[in-house]
Image 1 (cartoon, rainbow, N blue to C red):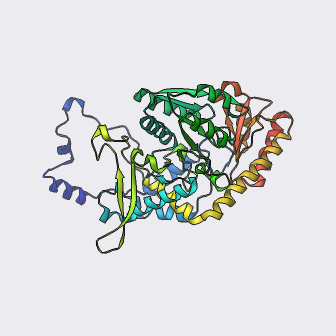
Image 2 (tube, helix red, strand yellow):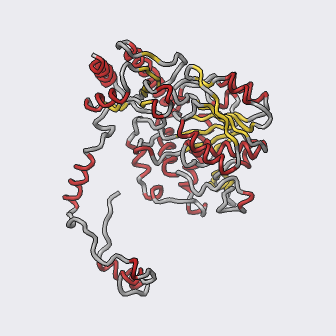
Image 3 (cartoon, rainbow, N blue to C red):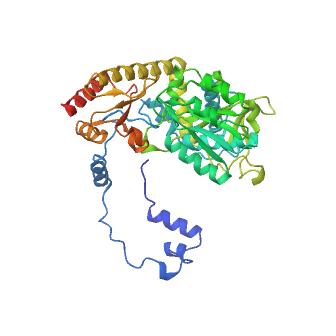
Length: 448
């Protein structure tokens, strides 16, 4: 959004309304000894034209998705965003909206939240979804706390194949609530079921898994569900790349109790990692325990359809001891983008995008593994991300790729010391066959 300065006349009118004579009167309560006495050493003012040129020049230093081919995933994904998404987000009635406290004045925002919740329920095959969470990581942590409160147990089991940063957020939340987190080892890119079973007991509130997991592998959640519920624990599934739900079985079909994830892939740009939006869906039995709030549908006294905040168990609305969480807001604008995106592409469109991602990912994997020294690290089934063992340092490979305007894969040594010679590549519909061939050719040059 462009910024337009207030005119001198507008400033005078505002000061007059406040009963003040100058801008300095606004700061009279600040001690003189801490006020800035001399003018800041700023460059001379620029015209809008000059400033626009300078900012564009600065921006050209950055590697962006317009000029670079991107094969980086790991939690943020480069998908195509139809123009209608940004058009709707930029409309004043949505762009400037905040918490819809007055239902009669917030029907548009309440409806968009209701539609978002409904679509998340359809995608996950769960009974109820709340208004958007901060992001996928905090949504997962909130789900764990919800399970702990519901079961009155203190133990949490989480797979090491869950996104490492999500696990860090969980640990921070758990420490504050006096919960104990137990991590399960990885076997061939998948959660080690034997190790998980050895940690299950009557003190465990929930088991958390991600599928596709951090390595891109698809977990065998049907077998895991049986073990989890046999021990009367709750199964929490995290979906960080929800485009996968276009072709993979939804979590509700294999008995997940709570489904959380990151919906950035739905109409939201990568934006250097944020802001994104988390989602949470669950079974009806957890309805009164779900954090945040719920937008519902009803009829007014004249029988007309209307939207309201049905449930808002936040500290801002009820007593702290009865609140489900201290979530202060929701990512409504980002959720609107996801809602518009999903409404636009529809069920068949989502399936087609997922198919393209999966097909091109497997094609790319085969091409890379055809180069000397590159091997697929795990043989577990994968969606659109896969791990490759490299014949030379991943950092060296990525530096060479950047020179060709290619953003390479994630260097796994950043999170897993045992995989320091590995890279994880991500393929979406934005990666054309030409860019994939360019990636493979550059990898060949690096080892030649």
